[in-house]
Amino acid sequence: MGRGKVELKRIEDKSSRQVSFSKRRNGLMKKAYELAELCDVDVALFVVSERGKLYEFSTGERSGIA
Image 1 (tube, rainbow, N blue to C red):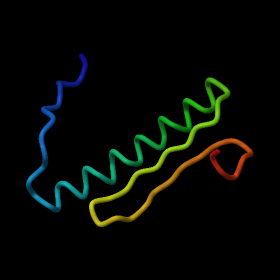
Image 2 (cartoon, rainbow, N blue to C red; image 1 turned 180 degrees about the vertical axis):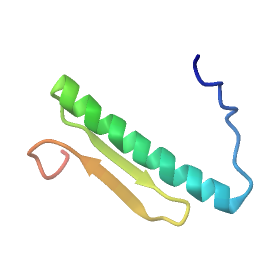
Image 3 (cartoon, rainbow, N blue to C red; image 1 turned 180 degrees about the horizontal axis):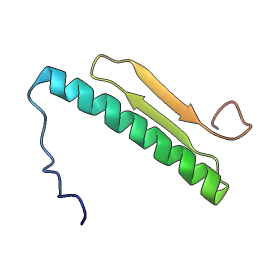
Image 4 (tube, helix red, strand yellow; image 1 turned 135 degrees about the horizontal axis):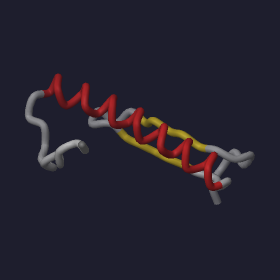
C-alpha cells in the first residue's frame, strides 16, 4: 500500500515547517546522490532556506559550474 498524496500548501506552524524543511532537504540530497551514482552523472543542488542559509550538494571532480 502506497503513501497518500500530500496536499501542497504552505505549512503555517513555524516549528513544523522547519522540521519538514530539514527532512525534505536531506531526502532531496539523498536522491541527488543516488541519481549521480546510478546514472554516472554530475549533479549540483542548491537550496536556500527561509533565513537565507545556503545548502549545497555536488558530485563530480569539477569544483565549479560553468
